[in-house]
Length: 469
Image 1 (tube, rainbow, N blue to C red):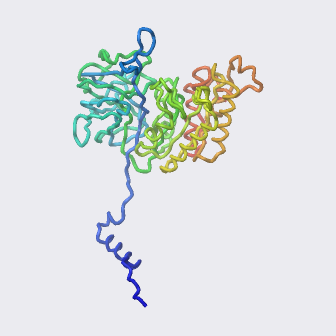
Image 2: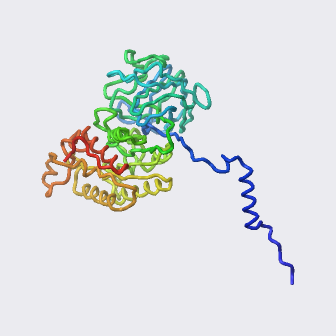
Image 3: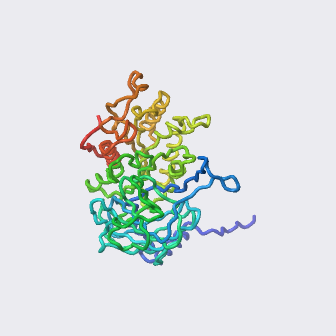
């Protein structure tokens, strides 16, 4: 009988002994890893879209290059200071900023950057507290940064006491010609100031003439390049991203602090919750389809989900509110912009839930708010899709929770003529909570929505000061 072959693998006993010896030979801190006590989280953030616009010829048609491709252009600055004020959610003692050149086609050169607390002067969000003004650096101490096309950059952290719900002011200086390819189109206040020259350390820019390259006009404020302000917080802090379209973006809100994500952040702070809230809404955005020909409306929610939600540092929760734009003008089964089907929306939302759970995030789905009072949007077919999607959201079990915005803002409204003929009358947004004819909420409606979101995420039963019913 041949001799049995001796195994070349160590026995279980010897393997365990080897591993134990290896652990004992390491420092105690390495053998037993301590859980992280701090993390970075976005205390403010917005989703970037493309700032490129098509050039139109004298005939009203798109201008074309030598190859027959449409020509476009983007705001370009040189020797310009850009100052932008934002409202943070949670506070911290160390802060950094995140800049984006995701849509850029050329390198973005930021010559210098600073951060300060806002001075909270009436009608002047450019005013800073000079004693809080800090110089920002990049890549371990460099005073400037060049972002390649399609990239982001994070500044080095600085020590700065940032109170919760405070204004933070970020100043950027561009010495060389620079294209501002990334921006967030809609703001609810005069948040952005651009002046010619290096005015980085000026206490206010309100009295200076606007830069020739970025002349400010009424109701035309944008946030450029600034994707997030991040703070270092306890690891237990919840990082919440509100993900959606114009209703999340805060269309028709009277101030940046009046959108429903801002209300959620304020209520959470008032109740002593450790939570940061980012508004990742883009007006006119759809979940299922790109807005072809309207780059400012953003790519579809499915495409930007990883970049705008999942990949943000410190995120733990996402609240999704999409559907109205898809139902009104999304791509139908035949490929025409007649409205997305319930099946397409449900499949897309299920994908968001699957991705969130794969990344260990909690996801809350919000029901699609009614739009019967908004002329031109209602049809029996579209309403049937909205009701079917909401039924699935409420009962599918695909999410960690449901925020019933649809029920929260519903109420008495003035129906358009074609809607008035329906019996029974379709559900519409309450007039007292609508900022227009019944598509976008007003401050009262947003307060109801923010309170509902807080109740869903924190298992509470708060009531907004004024309801919609």
